[in-house]
Length: 382
Image (cartoon, rainbow, N blue to C red):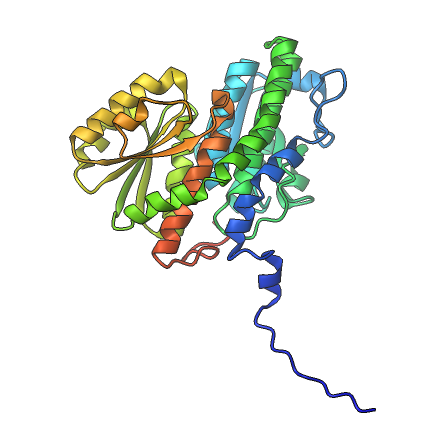
């Protein structure tokens, strides 16, 4: 008997299917951040407590004898490197320098015996970072790549590699890879501390457990998306943003500013809060929005002082603050709450509301979330 076929119109394409039901890749990737952290930390510690990297083809003796660490990276990866500087110096007691990759080989860098260079790139194809590690190797440094892509150019040209295991990231503005990079780099800092015996074994164990707890804290922040969207709606008319932080809150502020620039095309700058009086305060006036990372107890009083200064000059203040911070509401116009965590791990938690804020601002302004104008996912030309 004849069969009558009825044409079915499908209003999605392969890209839509790959988004897993989300409106865009960035939303999908933001929501994958807890898993990105868990995957990056998976199987990184032996039963005896030793932190291990199967891909790290540099001997323990060489790592123990490192005299200086130089980190080269660009954009979001550079901000992850800045966080790593704090962790490596605190835990491993090794001097760390963080360089913009595109500047490194042009300044005749000094590479001494015992220099370890860490090149960070999501794709592993960032030309500036590849050129920087080539220059470092030419001058005698040992090089470790931190990348998300197996067998990428950066991975192949380095002496060793640490993979972030975040899964494919499609959106131009990086989110989940930043968190995975910070997790991997802080784990490396703990491994260096073990080898150099600069942190008691019990503290290393506690830090490792703390790192693993971050994934759940990020998941908690993701449940608060609507409250971040409400703040963004109130600020859609603003055009000038300053992001402030101290200690690891500073690279978090830089990353928050970068996300807002990339996605919304609004003017946004990240500053160490202590630099306010050295120039930026002249730009603070009514209509300017100051976004502050105020989660570190040791920096809390100083950050409140900074916010009082900008508030007195008419700025609107948005604060990223912990759930138990009762004093922040007296000075901030809007508060984005996050769970309290070990300050060294806080960038992975504190950056999430800043990602959500940048996203909400961009959506409110009708921007192309996954493909911001003038930008590419991988920068392969100088």
